[in-house]
Length: 303
Image (cartoon, rainbow, N blue to C red; front, side, top):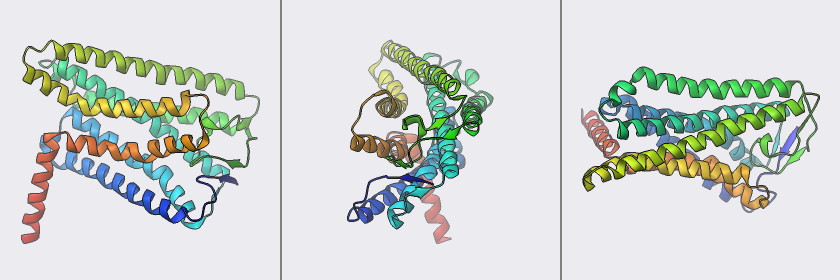
């Protein structure tokens, strides 16, 4: 068994933290589930942009449900132990969802670029089949990378500390948790994959948004520029928050343990909570869909 130290042994803070995280967890679940339901139910939201938003919300629901229930249970009971097998399972699911979310954000970026730069060809370039292939590729990539990691881990021996000063099972931040003949190969493969999946995808995202901004500035009317920018501003904020948190979490070499846990909380809870807030509050189509759903619900209750 491993011990996830979490927030330490402060008994006076455990009930407060439990209530706080429980409220945020339920809010994140409700917000993302609301987006999925609205996109499925309202045919006016059956567009590529909202198709990707709904899939991103589904990933956020799975992500926050992978780590938060275990943390809430430890805050409620004080039991911070977890078996090595369960910890590896949680880590693998976390890897799948993180890689899938990264590629979904990239697909949304490409979608916005094509919508703004090639508006006339956009319906033909980004149709339902293309969107389905993008989402499928995001999931296949995450699952394939997780299977590769699992193949190396199963041939290794856990030689890390029994007590881990983390909130959830993230072996990427634990110093040499596994030993074996294939560890150097594992380190090489993960390093190459991190460079390809994180740095190159981040550069692709930056270049794409530079092209988007250049094309927006070429629009002659200020109303057209404002409308074009409003269609991608929410996604730009989400991308900035996501990559800023990931870079702070993994790329900064020395971070105080307390600050590292603050980053973990932000990544685990606040990012899934901010996604539905940004996409609901900043999009008129979602507002209209919410109003129609409310009217339909009132009519159903009276009936």
